[in-house]
Length: 436
Image (cartoon, rainbow, N blue to C red):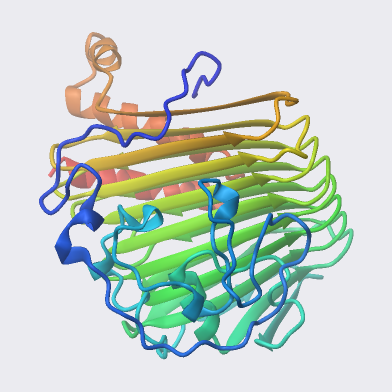
């Protein structure tokens, strides 16, 4: 169990790990071979307004941002043309190998999107709608070029609505199954209406090259858990923007589990729009040789008296395995009474793997309950191994026990027994592979 009460914050610097070929100290994106290509995509009309007052400054198509160092100053727009072509020198892309995005950042996304199949309990409404549906755009607005490209090119959206006061009897299972490698766009909207309670599982499988936008609305008093599982085939490329907007006294749990795929980049965000809301953002990732697994999250405390807790844990093994975690927490001037903490832990199992971890905390008011962040990356704890081996446990078994215990803290918070069992088995397979 992670003890966050005795840790010291560590601001901004990537963790010191053995270098991978093609990477400088700042990551692969600073290499000349990573330069992005100019885009030829034509901008499309805006899809709709971002609801609420949680964004300090955003654009409905003009690309207006606040040109300062604040996380609130990030350019946002529904139009691809407002985002400059990527070079890899941008802060948000400096760790991402652009050459492996397979066109998500610089081509029209005309491929067939992964098939969506929803198994929902009684009362939950599932619809397929056009991009002109009024619910599209109520919770999110693109914050980067790949997200904007997905927004501009999707043709239909899946909308999942949990009606007011419904206590869902089981989880909403959303199977997202890819079957092609042509660059595509996908859009999903999840709405938890007032005082409802539900769990939604986004289960990504198969092969795909996809820019995905997921909008999440948690209305007043609602409780919603969203679990995004990336268990793609080895050749998949997945960039997913998952933005949530929370109402008064809402409770939101967001869990990212990334295991499969060639390149997976998930950018979750939570924005508080009314007091009393709570958010828990958790993550688990396990990178094998050659995999790039990236998580960049944002918690926007824009109003008073809200709470957030962030904990991501990852393990890496094999040559050129690379993980990236960047956590941004913003406490605005109006957000008095905020209570927040974020932490990231990485366990490097073999030589040749690299974990970059960057926690960021921005505070505009001192009238808060508490705020902090921490990051740690290292190898096995020799004391733990010695303790187990001194009691007759072989070294290989002891190592597996340490890793299993390290990651199980996240798995046990999922609270979906079948999924917890599935992930435990997946971790066991990864550990077995490391022994060979």
